[in-house]
Structure formats: structure tokens, C-alpha cells
Length: 95
Image 1: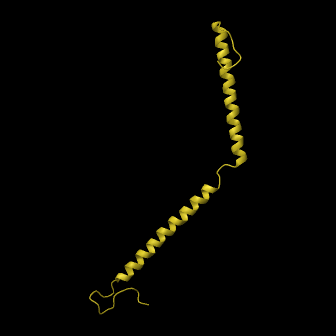
Image 2: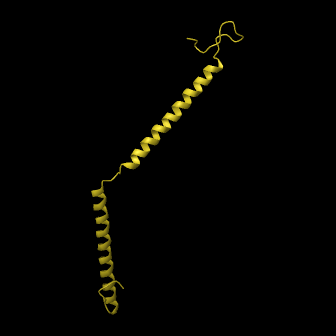
Image 3: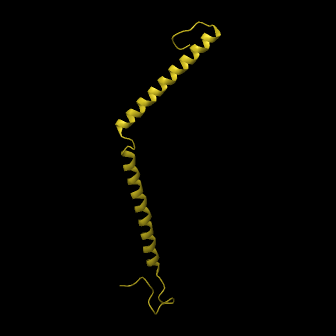
């Protein structure tokens, strides 16, 4: 086991060698690449699994439709009341 340090007879004894710094850089690069790979896989799986179940999504769409119909009917009735008050003829459809 070399410990990646210079020998005691070198000009800089027991200091880290260039090989040590290359191995350290490779380890850090591996950690960063692996972390990004795991994050990418997690994001892909999260994309594949829907947040809202299909049945609930259909019920939400149905409720939106019913609310729009109620708003349409309320607006139509409001316009008919305005026409009655102003003396204009009343139509039973959207003006």
C-alpha cells in the first residue's frame, strides 16, 4: 500500500503525489455523475407515475363542466331579467 505519498527520500517527502490528486478528482467526478444519474432516473419515474388518479381526474373535469353550466344558466337568467326590466323581448337562448 503506497498511500499515494512521496517517499521519504524525495524532494517533498510524504506529500501527496500527482496520482493521488487524479484519483481524488476521479472519485469526485464519479460522485457527481452518479448523483445526477440517480436524480435523472428519479425524475423520469416521477414523470411516468401520474400525480392524480385517472378516476379523480375525470371527476374534476366533470365538476368543471357542471360549474360552467351553472355559470352559463345564471348569466342567461341575469340577462333575461335585465331584458324584462328594460322592456326588451326575452329570448330563451344565449343572446
